[in-house]
Length: 274
Image 1 (cartoon, one colour):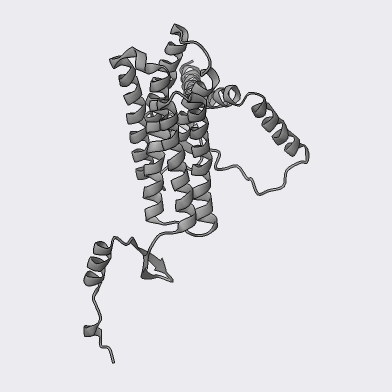
Image 2 (cartoon, rainbow, N blue to C red):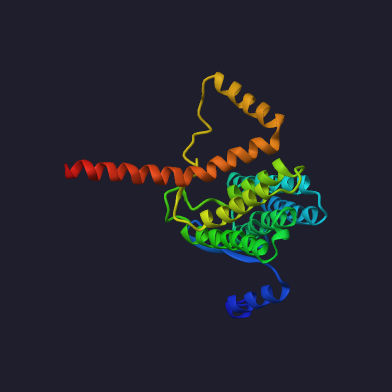
């Protein structure tokens, strides 16, 4: 018969887990803490695929294949959207998955877009080029860190600052749209504005619609699906240009809404004084 004293205590179990490299998380099951070993395969496999796409984008840009690099960033966006939803649908959320997803996002939506833009256009500007690139990369890192600390404390209808996947899409869309153009001053200036501006918007306090309040499970009129088909057709005609315009407009929507709110408040204040 095994007595309580013969069993290993929690401390010895933790030491064994640490030396074996095993991931151990504590979950509440019917109000009681239960320790779980290992990680969930499916959501973390999707996160790994997103990380690989970001890494592939960097390698492609270094080899001068900029259209593939831009496409890889958009693939990372799709995979990043899937891993969290799959984890919630299959009830396989975990602290490890959240941390791994955040690190993968830093590569796919921070380092990769910055380096793709740098290899494509900004490397000819010497210190100015890498300074603009670093503004973007640092902005993505700060944006992700702030997002992780604000989970559960911010209205889900809005993001504070431009989301890093949207910033990455604006940069990748720019490269995809203009990758066949000859280097020109206006294009370099546009790249500086998009890359540097996206980095600044990510760390701003400007609110962006998250669209998490949209009800995608409810019934809609039949004509709605025709609109969805039309959207896919338009994107298929010129994916680079259409995606660039869409995410550029989204990036500009935050400052636009902020200016409209400020003007509205100014008008109300002027009305009160009269």
